[in-house]
Length: 421
Image (cartoon, rainbow, N blue to C red):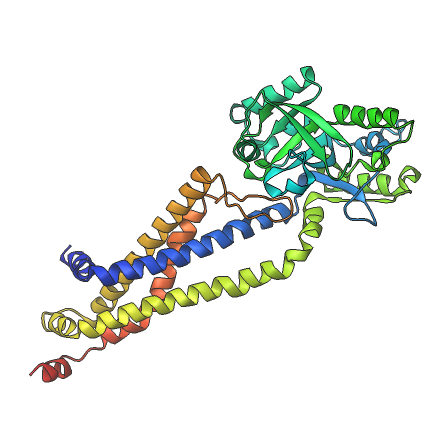
């Protein structure tokens, strides 16, 4: 017990150095926590699954994908022959179109702050097929379920993410006009019927518009323009999501879709959602590699050097103390462990505190880390960050303090007292 009392007394003895070391640890742990928050989310999104697989069907030769909506019915059935009972069929589906507009009527004043990004889709699929939302219990998405039901009663209803609602200074029940940008001259009069839950954060800035309502607006455009269809009318299907139970079913489904003559102009491709997302993130690949293998190790090395410098100064100042401890009967390894424990304790507590504060503030105050990558506008700090921070703080503290601790272990009593006298 007295041994641990000595450790805590040593930490308390120089509060300025302890606080500075702790702050340095917390700042670098914060940086690495933010980095790993993004990398973990990307890894999770691009990891292949062996069951409950989501497939994505897109246009083969063009990005962004813009297929005719006439493809939708056959694709949602997996291009299966109705007479073939052995054909692979998806257990669920979701079609996506994209309507990008602005709530500002004056083109000169349009910017990111009034941009309006929405999925054009079947509202009920928001609950069963949207990533992460489909895995949440009903108790956590009850307002969303109610909003989906409301869209059946309100044809021009829209579900808007909480962050976009806040930016627009609107609430559920308000009406908005969205002026089309990718669908020029298509302006939508919408009624906000509900919102997404705060988690997952990726949909906080998005919206959902009913496909039936959107198609009626395209038909109305055609009628008002002398029978001339909108330029995007036959290119309104972006992606089709299909859920299959396992990899063999996915492979067979892919063969059916690719081999179907119904999808030849334009041609389509079918891939797992993880592969598709990897394709979207291809432009970020080198950045992710550099952050993972260069920035993160560099942060840990810098942290180790900071701790090494602080502990080295402390060891030099405390050489007489270590000499007295040896005279009192402390063994060299006990002194080694005392210095290491002091450093590791500071690193562990500082790392844990930094990670815990990051977890709470980013998730509960800011609603996620606002760092847009492709269609990931925000990232939630995972609970695993708590042990990341503690392990990182303790590990770098151990690495940085080992050499100074060994020097303390090797202090010679005769040399120290010779200098004193």
